[in-house]
Length: 263
Length: 377
Ligand code: SF4
Image 1 (cartoon, rainbow over the protein chains, first blue to last red):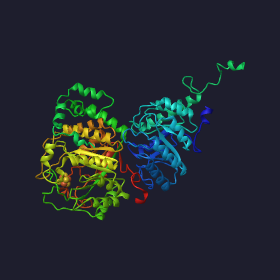
Image 2: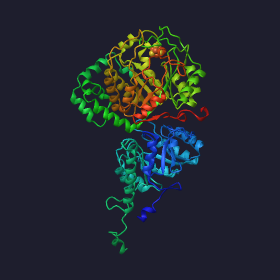
Image 3: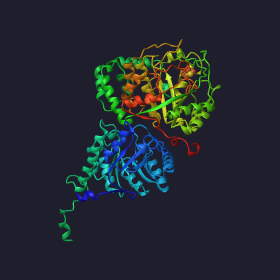
Image 4: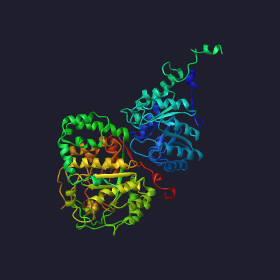
């Protein structure tokens, strides 16, 4: 338990009490969204710049997000290339002073798969401009490395295409990304059930981002709570050192230690 | 470069009808069970045997729409800029031979209209004109677009078809979406109901949307005027058209409209009636083939039906529409419009109905920064 209490997620120097990030789109109303955010226990929420009027505090979606409680991370969803994403991000920063940006570059509206080339390009520019950049990417370990190298605060690989709720279809690549990364890895998109979130956390993800699965559930509040528990359970299991599929070497009693004894 | 109209022979609708006639229940069940329904499945989805499974199709459509779009419906409003028209479309209130007062709006008047909509919360605007470029041409439309752009979330046009250069000008002026209804995919019927004017050119009209795709519009909207030809066949043609556009312009979002013909006095009557159930089958079938497409419903349809169709797959709706240039801010003169609207509720009332259906009302789902530089904003 002590281990769990000291277990704080830090991104770009900011500490987060929850490892569940929540998206704000697709809810039946801003009120239901606000209640779901609360039930989820999240500390970080993302909102699409294309959906909100970022310079207008009375915007119905923005005003429903209590920024005293949650860090707001705008996202560039809808951007088709680096130039568009950079433009959106800069406007948001100019309007609010907020320099956190979830970078999404999706050239095609069908499946909304992220463009690795344009995302890397945009990340490079935005990091230079002083943004804290959290890029949404396909589960590509090589790309994740590149993004870490240009100074991104996290990488956010997808589990499955957005909205599909199919779970960890990219499990093997996610495992490699997690193993290699020196920055937090947030599994984004495709998580449809709390058990998927658990699975991502057990695998060693630092956090998960969930939107559709909560927003379109029959009871979004109950589902938000279920995800909160799923994420915690998965994290606890990870910290506990799972006997089954851990990638980490188990320290207690090396089996081949004797080989070194004679050396 | 080949265009979709190369694939649309005069005989194609008949072939589609034949294909549809051969569909049996087994084919419907196979499609229902498949995990990825494809545009080639259109004749099955729109066939008479599929009607028996309308509820299952609707459930699937609802699920898919929720996944992709969430519990949200985006509102838009038409802004009619000019009713001048040189075409003689036999079903239209603005047709050239009709003795009506022709109105065209100055950019300032258009802005006034936009401001009225803005006050009501509406930010997605669709600019419309008839086809009379010498009276109201591309320059006029671009001027309006430039003026409205900073206030609009999204700006689309439904105007006369033009060439790539024309569409590039519109895109530079900040227009992000293009709508062109082919009206009917039946060449013979098309020739009969388009009695005079440049619109008689079926192929030019059909290839125009592809020029729009090349110009980089974010949304490409298609539609057939339902009630002219046999609707299930038209829907098959729309599906083929949509599939073609999606493949050729994967960066653009497809939008599909389902306007049912509302006859104007002395105009073409409904030739093939489309019942509410027929329309429902078209909508849910289209959703299953195009999970990410915007499915659009205008105020042509009556309020109770519009409300019912929300959960089934509709993602865009107009509200409080006026179909006459300068129509907003005046007492209703719906009779003078391009067509008579059925759902005459206010924006507020439509929004309340959407919320009552358990959906959020989205007024802004696009940002001008995506398409224009900040110096234009
Ligand atoms: S449908 Fe369009 S082109 Fe045809 S007459 Fe009416 S306004 Fe003119």
